[in-house]
Image (cartoon, rainbow, N blue to C red; front, side):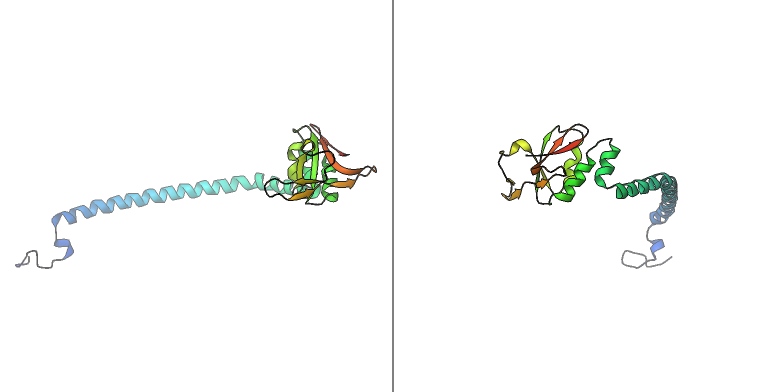
Amino acid sequence: MNARAGPDVLQPAHARRATDVALRPASAARSATARRWLRACLLLLAAHVAFAFARVPGKVYGKRAAEIAAYETRGPARYLLGNAGLGGAEVVEWLRAHVPPEAVVLWRGEADGTFEVLAGLLAPRLLVADTALAPGATVHRVVPDGDERPLARATLPDGRSGVLVVCARADDLALEVR
């Protein structure tokens, strides 16, 4: 022992207090237990992730790849409407091919069925109810910014010409002129 022991004399860390030495082994035992639990949790998490990756790809990725190929082959209108058992894909394709993107397409009829996906398939063309415009109108004023967009005009394959109106039924679409 050191003869000059007192508060102003430097002592080794292990001899400062007797309680310090007693706490170290219990603290070390707790940290070892915590490390074992952490390893066990990480091992279980890794097993869970590995099981999920092993199980999912065969079913999901193969099916999704086939759906993407069908979408690319058939086109958006035929794929979406055909899978839902609805008609009107040829009308949507004709409108996309013959109506400029900045035009307004008028519609009338039922707001269920085929019409529910029509706006998404015709975007960026604007879809407006036929009753919202006066009979002789040639443009539609977009309310928020005041821009005017022209109404879609074309000549149908049967020779009728004028402002286009999509007539929506529950399971099909038709084109008319106004």
